Length: 366
Image 1 (tube, rainbow, N blue to C red):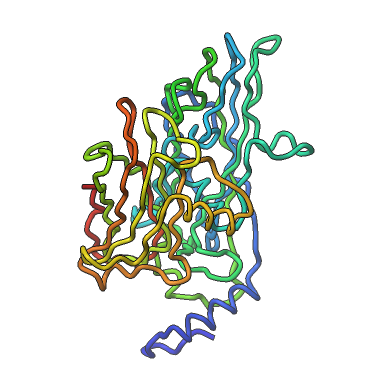
Image 2 (image 1 turned 135 degrees about the vertical axis):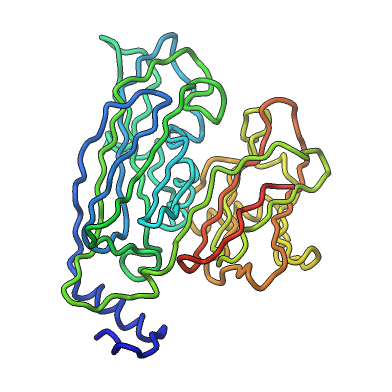
């Protein structure tokens, strides 16, 4: 039962109300619809429904791809880098997710403990993930992939970050931006092999909710933001043997950092272009001294497989980094090889913080 008016709401009350909602609420999956067609470079903006407690979105992106001069060479980040930016915002315009699709694929792999929907999987369900590589007759091939966009940290057990959408005031949207360039390097759908034309981009969207059956709602969960903050890219101060520092976001409980090193448009095999990755608190305390190989070993152990080379998942999920208690938390990256060209580090953070908390911006790298 909800607490009486005027009584302090505690974490024990939240746990009780969360359990009530999970055990008595009705899980529902609502088809928002098939939206489109969209064009390359366009941003799709899809309105969500004001119903229930939103825990997750399921998104399927499809398009038609015409290939000239194939076979094409698929980027190791494909097909997920086809969504160059994904944004979900709540009624307060607080962004819950703002990250590219390939970062979301890393996060979903970490959350589920297995590599998320790799394009090489599936000899039976062959339309789950499809990236065409050859010219076909008469003209174009189907292109598909799927992503989950979590609002709640765990829709089945931990509802931190879920959104109460039972309101007649306000609107929520999902925005997805598509690229204009499709053949270049790892940042695009293909790294070479010919030319492509992309048309008829569609998004099919499902909204997953819990429909409450009484007034018991986990107020702390619903006043928590589960944030995936990505799209950060830096190409400055990248030199062989010189430390590069990424600042962790302040006033958050950071559950993970996701990053990859693009070295002249490539992800180097066996992570040989980085020497060390250190987690550093207050400038001097080294919380984690890692090599790329040991991080990849941890990733293989946790996921039962390998993400593309050059991708790193720094896991603090069991004991999140509480950046409010430190003056500064950084990830130090020491390159072993830095080549001229399209060279950068891209990263994202998976965090939680109380809704309406005054937040400083996430600093760029130094």
